Every structure is written in structure tokens, then in C-alpha cells.
Image (cartoon, rainbow, N blue to C red; front, top):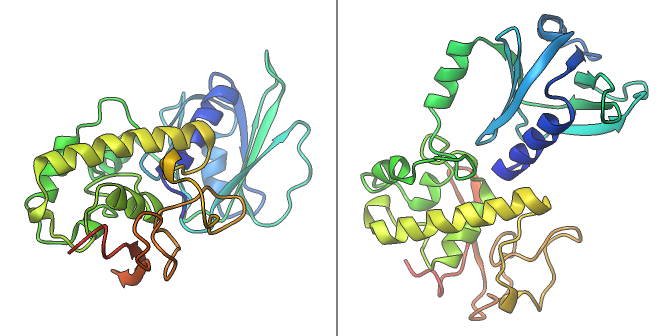
Length: 270
């Protein structure tokens, strides 16, 4: 599932290429036809991300809310766009202006819907602070974390605690700070939480900038290659059974609340 940095990259792209102009919106697949008709031909005033949620604000006051889920993706194209291929839920075409024309197709999202302003407020208020949003308050998350007996590995994936973190950032930030994913929230100190939050902000900003999750420090960025050819190295994510890059202990793996969990038993003692 795309993590928060991916949605912020998309929001920045759509803000830069589509905001401020009229956008033609359609649903070649048909599943979003009624929603597309509500915003078609309106001016896109702002594109923004909250955690894993993408919001397109239109001058009518309506907002298109997208959650990519496991399989959703946007593909970009210059104009004229080719005929739709596959199940295109939403097609957006910006009108040519100072920049060349731009279009994008959305396929396979979990959510693509039109919301009113109060519904957007309700959505964002139930999310935890997003490390990539200016003014995000890490203390809001800390108040939930340090009162909970749930393991920190589960708390970090709870979007009501912190918005935008997924499996990779969860596994890697815990390793970088030597914290077992099984430690209860009540066992974390305020200093540990502050250090983790600061690290998350920096790591996720890098993700927005380069489009990849760069989590291994330069002095450790060698040895066994990444888990996929187009991905940077990780410390623990998808490295079960491989030797830890720091101590050589085999990386452990299990399911935690139906999500894959990776950690080093030596560097992250229980």
C-alpha cells in the first residue's frame, strides 16, 4: 500500500499541474460517473494530502477524496491523452495554459468519492498527525501512544495515532531507534517518541523529494542488495532470515494484526 510520502508527491504534482485551472473530469469505467459530473468543468483550487488520503478541492466547495488502498495508482500523460486503457475510475484533464496540458488516470482505488466540507472535516479530524504536514503536533500522537498497552508496532500503523505511516516506515524507524515492535506504548519514553517522530519527518520528506523510501544510513548502505531491483536498501523490511546489516542476527518476521512485521531480535531487544 502506498505510504504517506506517495500521496504528498501526488498532491504536489496535481497542485503544480492542475490547480488554478478548469479540469475536465470523467469516469471511463463508469463507477465514478455521478461524482465526476459534479466536479467536471470546475476550477481545481487545491490538491493536498492527509496521511494516505488525497483531497482535490474545487471552487464549488466540493472535494474529491481518493484513497489508493493496495492497488490504486495514478498514471500521468501529456495532451492529447490516449484512449483509456483498463478500468480507469477517474480521468482528469487540465486545460493548457502557461504549462503544457496535463492529464492523469486513476485506476483501482479503494475510495474515490465526492465529499462536502463537513465530511472532509470529519475525515481529517479522525486522523492522527501527519509528519509531512506543516504544523503537525507530535504530542497528539504521544498522548495516545504512552497511554496504550498495545505494541508500538501496531500503534504506528493505526492511522488514528499517526497518519501516513505504512509497513516500511514502521519497520525501519523502529530499527533505527533500537525499539522492539512488541514493546507496549506505555513502555516508550517521551524522549524516544520525540526522536522517532523527528526521524520520521526527515525520512518521509526525503521520500517526497526523491520518490523512494531511503531509510538506510550512508555508512550502512552496502552489502546485500535491496529486496527489489528498483528499491533502496532497507535494514529489516522484507529481509526475513537475512543477516542484520549491523549485527548479523537473522532478521525475524511474523504477522502483527494481519500485517507483515520485520525486526532484528538483537538490535531491537524485547
